[in-house]
Length: 336
View (tube, rainbow, N blue to C red):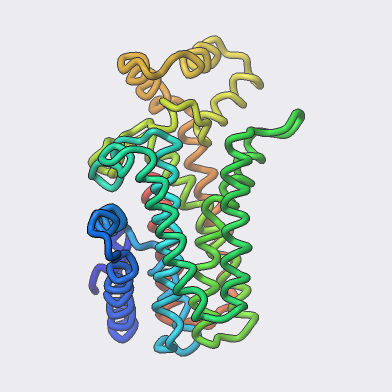
């Protein structure tokens, strides 16, 4: 039983393990090749996060979804590279918007080279992903374009905030569906589609990816509050410092409005204050870690995971299905 991919996922099927390991190794080579430029500086910036590692969560899903058809079909590895390049590009842009200093345990690109280089490097990765995508056919281009539109829409909705009268939690979950769920869904869809899997299987895996993607981000929300930088690979409470309301904060505000407890209201006021002050930020982080809102966010994460898990029921029993189920367990474990 060997560890594969993110979260220490263990694959019990030796043939599946070999396919997944070979696929991920090919994706890694593809990422390095796709991020090369004739300009050495661009290569260094573009490969900065590739070489920093990462979970390769989306390529892993491509490989597992491909097991429901021909896992050796020629479009599988390139489509996994496309999805991961798109994800990496969004990280460069996210770090600029969040003014993050650390990503995957190393200096963020904006910290090392400045915002302009970070944004343009993200654009470079989008361009390289599009170049690879063009060889995968018009249907793949359309699917990626729709997902990218959803991703950008989700980011804009997050920036704009909920409209008057809209439940902030529902708004936030819609945001995550766009920002994270859309691309994870594409990873599953590409893997199944490129392998020639039945259309019903493609649909099941796409829905699984959407739900798991949201759960994955909710787990990250919890981890950002509950972990230290060694566990998460980035500075804890980054969103908190920037005033970005993730699910634990939204659950806190919901509880404060519903119950009117003085301690909840006081914590909300602290979160509304200037958290660029290190001492105030540390106090807010500590108090939120001990608050029931964090546990509520964990329960929300589990609910999305269970939705993803139950959606797999129509698929035939096999090693790939067992691995997808185990990924659900891993996301729950990640959220604590």
